[in-house]
Amino acid sequence: MNLLREYIRELLKEEMSQATVGSVLDALDVMKDIKNRQQRKELLLKLAKKFGWEMVKFIPLVGDGIKAVKSLGDLYKLTKDTPDAKVKKDNIVFDMLDIDDKYQEMLDDELEDLFDSKVIPQLKSMPRDADLPDMNDVLEKWIKQKFDKRGIHGADT
Image (cartoon, rainbow, N blue to C red; front, side):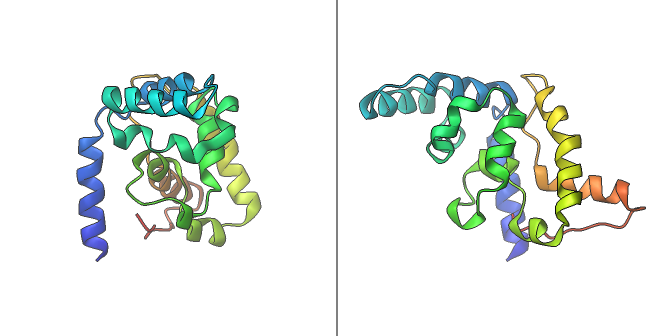
């Protein structure tokens, strides 16, 4: 079952070649000043035509926090604590930026805070044409570097 999930995720990653830092931030910027539900619906449809529905379906999950998002680091802060049960696994933006709930349970809060303090500045400084990072992969690599090649693996992807 995990092999199938990994295969599907790889297919989605290939399909999401336009899932760049800039396209996510552009989509969020457009949605910041909406005034009513009809305008929101119209803008989501326009964005879906431009970027594809896979790219924009994360926006409703962000909710009112959208106004505070100025960088990928800000979006990461919003997504990382969203319970996995609330997000369908085919939501590629959330899936890439969210840390697996089981990883968060295993990690000591201090260690997670240290990871965040290292990764958020990196996310904020990413160029607009960079691909979205898979934060579970980033965390796994960071743990290996921090703990003499000992690591974690098996995030539910």
